[in-house]
Length: 347
Image 1 (spheres, rainbow, N blue to C red):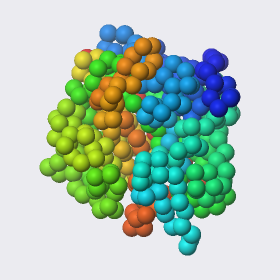
Image 2: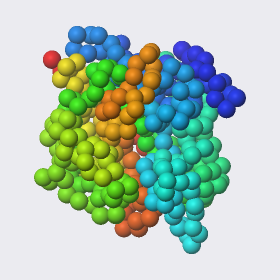
Image 3: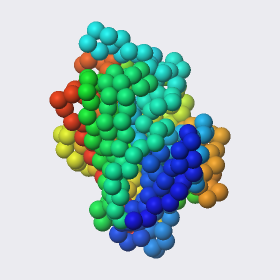
Image 4: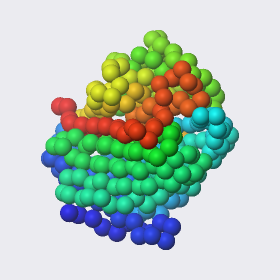
């Protein structure tokens, strides 16, 4: 069971855990933020590269320049308008860490910024636990959450499970930044992306959803057939607030069932990432804010459009749109989130 020191955060020592998959695949996960630090996989010639952006030590993940590399995002992924929502007659004010809005769980004690407790670690898996007390970042209820990363042959599985003692919003995701040519190997604009989604969330210039769902037909968000990212990013570059892909797509199929959602293909290396999930939606983000570039692992630099995020989630800002499917978790419920990242190659 391979683990190693990973630096110090908030006076506590962080550790990093290595998971072995098939055919040279491996992943590394740190207990700081239940964060995916690395994913190694071979190309069509058997050359193994690290495919996700990150840092060599935990101090990088604590720095302001970290754009949520590999993080477990919670309590609520994406944005909440004005950092405010009303629940059972009480209005809750959250941290507005992307002024004037709330982003990815808050400013100081969001799930990505805290130490998680090790539950179990074997050669192919690790499970981490975090307790988020009532009032953390302004949210009601105490939440107990577990994150498991595990290899099943050529597939990295991410599983979140959570309970609460009071009704609270909960909408988790993993925020890995993928470059199938190798993290730091340039941009991903020649990768081809397919997403099995026929609607998207309408957003304003602050990327706050209106609550309306729009058909993707005839727009750069129609990714139902493989599309080179360069084409879509170019078409979306001048859209206010976006600068490329930064959109919530509503997945086809039955929510709650793990089903195919997206395929990312790098024609240069032959690598393919197949994403399946039980979540309703997928946020597609093309690294539009990696400018100026971020210095990362092994001396690599991650620049503009240097990676793609595929973030399975519930509907963003659903707490302020009662017509959308709820992201509220009650004390008699268990939150479950399953996502599978299968790493293969094409000739």
